[in-house]
Image (cartoon, helix red, strand yellow):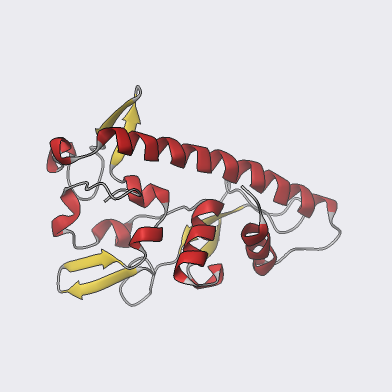
Length: 183
């Protein structure tokens, strides 16, 4: 299902492979939605990883980090992945999940919704486009792009605060900033 409840079709027989093997980078809007909807603090489901092209730093001229969903060491799956039965798993945060998850595996190519061929769950033929709300998916993909634009603008504000400061910031400082930021 997409963020607005539209079925994508191919997930019905899902074993959660994408939730185990993909790195899910999240926007600040995703973090706020998950924190509020799941009644969790971001430190319970987000991890910050050092990355050259990351979005955040914690000290002036320090390394950059990105936000991504945690993976459980026991299942190697996303922290929200629920094991239902052997070979079957579902998202425990489904209604609040990140937009990139809600639109997966759809893509917008030349303003037209298509299914990606480079997924772990098969090529684009694994998905029945006739069962999908393509205009709704297009809208969700555009909303995700807007959320990333907002994310980058707000990350620039965070980094300006860090640069203006004479002391390092913590991960909890960033989480408080994210939770209190207006989109």
